[in-house]
Image 1 (cartoon, rainbow, N blue to C red):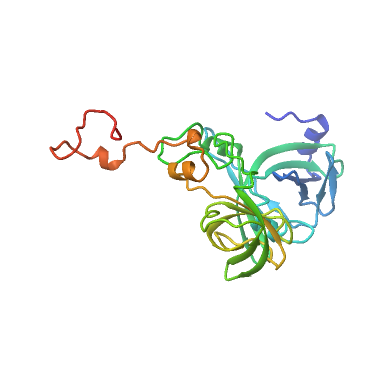
Image 2 (spheres, rainbow, N blue to C red; image 1 turned 90 degrees about the vertical axis):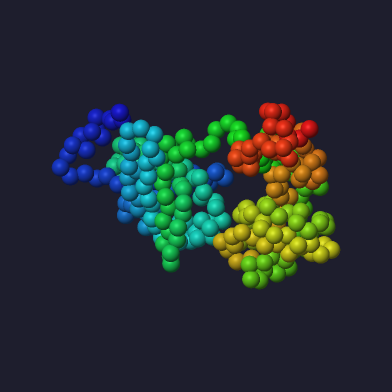
Length: 296
């Protein structure tokens, strides 16, 4: 139950109120933005809440149990507020949103209504719409290990142990051209074709600086690489933009051994029996099904 000050409770009980909503948005890169549906800017807790963004949001619906509550925030894409390229480049993915009820005549009278996380973001024309998920969505995330053939670790994380800062697993490049969704770069070092497929490309300059994109295909010719991306970046790519490329991993034990020499940290179960073993039945031509290993 929320604890309200006496003055806040009195204003809520009054027949006419001076309340508005404020939203404090904290991105994972540390950037904090403030928005309000009031007609002038407000400020508290060291954050300026801008009134010219056209942002509005519904209240998060919550129910008993562990069901994920949801709401939606909509607003205009403006240079002074939320920029389209930032949304498309994923800078707001997983951002935390605090929803405040604030007395605009005295911002010291305020109460925190809810805390949500930005989920799916959609856009049309000059307007965006973002899904707001309640904290219950954290219970939907996988915990612990999965019993699967492929590796469950992410390349370079603590379970994997591969050092992506090693020169053998990353390089830098300069954009030569971007046509038809295909990016051509001049790399600082040459790698075999397919080495970066499934890896990441991070722009380090230009309008997409900081954007991290997944590489779909990689074709190498001398020091020039042709890169296909699963999704295009939000801003225009210009000749001379720079980027960093990190190796890709297909989660197989063969890649873990041959490409990264890291089979000791493989986090999968490549010898687990598949459906063919489950539906198999004994016969004289097959190996003995005595519960022993199939890989002796």
